[in-house]
Image: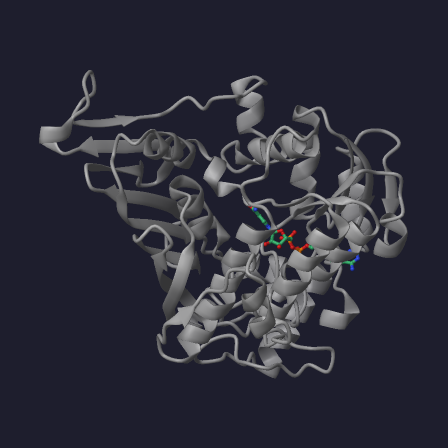
Length: 415
Ligand SMILES: NC(=O)c1ccc[n+]([C@@H]2O[C@H](COP(=O)([O-])OP(=O)(O)OC[C@H]3O[C@@H](n4cnc5c(N)ncnc54)[C@H](O)[C@@H]3O)[C@@H](O)[C@H]2O)c1
């Protein structure tokens, strides 16, 4: 597979995972010259470089990783498929329900492969949870929980939020949910049917930044397609970084250890312990299907999960498997992010989550492009948090000075 990478911050991780999977990176694209320069130190010799997507996408390659701005994935993924390329797209698939419909129909129209690069289901613990749950040993799931918490210092926030109108400054807390909902869907194979959400405001987290989103966390609650219920966070900024997943079933539970998602804790009802198993065990599982040394795959990024994302994408490209996070599941998650946010704005109102395999559902949302991100004229349709933060002139001046001092490239459209 000849692979191109669009967007070279997160995008750079894919160079490592491509190499481990025998995939050739042949072209890269970013309009930040510094990021191109850094990328070239790890890319194979002869990798072509572009600053313009329309030129990049014409390069002789089979597939592209879409790792540009979070709020602009769908239009570029569609353009890539229309140019004959398969797509591995970073999270999230789409930021409006209308885009979800456009994306699904672009995949159907072009017949190209589309896979969401959601990686957290492929960390050791969640992978083991999938294996144990799908074996049937725990019986039916009734309740699941997914938590993703990623706080940052003010300095890091300013380093990664590159412009007052950069996506990180306007992303509502429900929008970054694939790392918490994705593992739940992958483990149980269920999907959300309804969603209700609430958020907690924490303006103290954004003082001294250019951000407008000042919520600290949002919690979503879903009725799932298998009759269970699930609760999960969007990206939370409560203190102490970490992830945690739990599946509560009729005959027992399995969960990742607190503070270590490589480890799991498995417990059966005392009267239903399978032959040869302990009632309660805590262990670090060994994942199946790793074809490279452990230290190398673990170093690929995010607890080794980045290695598995590329492995699955390559297998799908070679026709050996259907990607689990295909366009329908990817857009189901985006729909939860979008409707979860509307639920927050309507004080926890329950929303039905559309099923984009269903053509009638598509008609309901085909023209729905409401979203919280600023448009070119810097107006927006809906607020990005319950109590919007408006950075003062003084704060913005200081942040701009910080970007200049650190020589951070700021796209003028979003400064
Ligand atoms: N799965 C994960 O573990 C994980 C981790 C980090 C980020 N992400 C996702 O990856 C995506 C990118 O995140 P990031 O942190 O790299 O964001 P970012 O905004 O820092 O980087 C985006 C890059 O794309 C470039 N870019 C954007 N539009 C462009 C255009 N039209 N032409 C040329 N270059 C363009 C920018 O210059 C920048 O270098 C996001 O969707 C984010 O959610 C996923």
